[in-house]
Length: 259
Length: 83
Image 1 (spheres, rainbow over the protein chains, first blue to last red):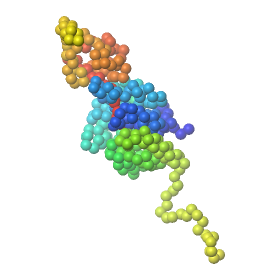
Image 2 (image 1 turned 90 degrees about the vertical axis):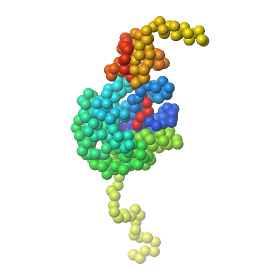
Image 3 (image 1 turned 180 degrees about the horizontal axis):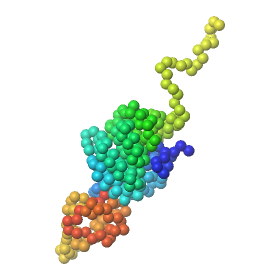
Image 4 (image 1 turned 180 degrees about the vertical axis):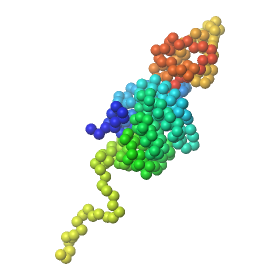
């Protein structure tokens, strides 16, 4: 079977779902179900007694086959991310941590230096580190060297819906990487998830495109199918591109042709 | 109802109160309250919460024995939606 392998963990789904920005917890849970996702991200936040429905741990942990991947969003330094990771592991029991360190709320670009430091420490502590990074092939390789379980380069800025603006860089990362490459952030349409998978990504992480849809569950199902289609196409092998037309029908022996 | 409220006030006055910082906001509690009492006070069974006192994680089995003191900084955290 063709499974996503993250360290010793095996997943049949290659679509990872983010749980932010849904208009209700019920819609989010429906989308998780429809997506077939087995890994879902959550964020650590202060308890708010006026917003008890914010607490997603209960409902998500009751869903069969779901593994939580807490993120460190809100952290702007390695030290903050490490602290968030420790608390998250305490609460979730999950070894997965999405290291996400973005100091600037305007562009939300990940800080490579702090990310590298947090990843190094957390990997040495036994976390399965999934770092959210800019599409930098050198950084990706350095993160692999310190024991990350995957690298998660962005397709484009978080929540921007600009798709695979980083495609050329992603291709290099995919070619060079010995660990799974997961496109995280920026996807808008299922066709972009399919393209990422056709390029050889191991999985895609999608949130805004599904949460901001008029029908999140339906969009989640569309992303599920597109991710599967892209993966199958990659495994089957795409035909070589040619700068010239190559006929599919015989061009000789046509009606009335003089022999 | 008025009587019940009054009774509560009398009980509270007879107890010495302390003030802690709960998620950055002041919160009054009877002296010698445990962390588990605080969770009951905010209406949670604590199963889906992480708790820290003065930056140290306090695990669920330790919450009943963990007595809060004046000025303690208590953080209660949950998993919310995030990408």
